[in-house]
Length: 50
Image (cartoon, one colour):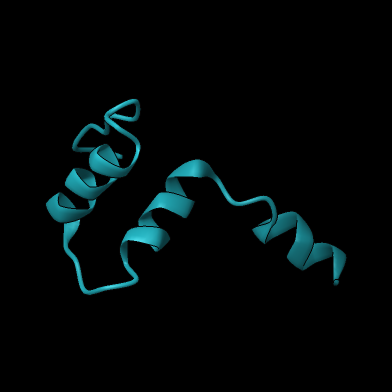
């Protein structure tokens, strides 16, 4: 793997992972927040700015 690509894209942040995971089906901002809280059993709470 190209060093530049690896440096820029790997590892993925937890926030990016959850957003992409929630976008497997069409979703919107607040829906993503709700889904993250549901799948993480509310250990991860996001603010509006996340």
